[in-house]
Image (cartoon, rainbow, N blue to C red):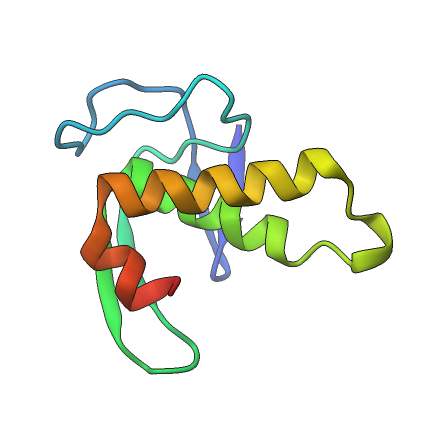
Length: 101
């Protein structure tokens, strides 16, 4: 499976131990899992943060949820977005503060 991020094609695969610390993606996560991390820049502050593959996968998932038009929002999307933010606060609070707060 291939995914595109910032115009770059990435091979994605479901992995458990590539580039990760102790964090794992939750069972409910149904987004694309990248096989490598990347640097992400907050569009408002200009600050950047290096994310591992799992953090980048969750970041893109959270940002994707935020891009869904309000007319298509439902309880499931809102819960996924909130759960993704909570996962970030727990697993990488510094990245959360730089990129998502």
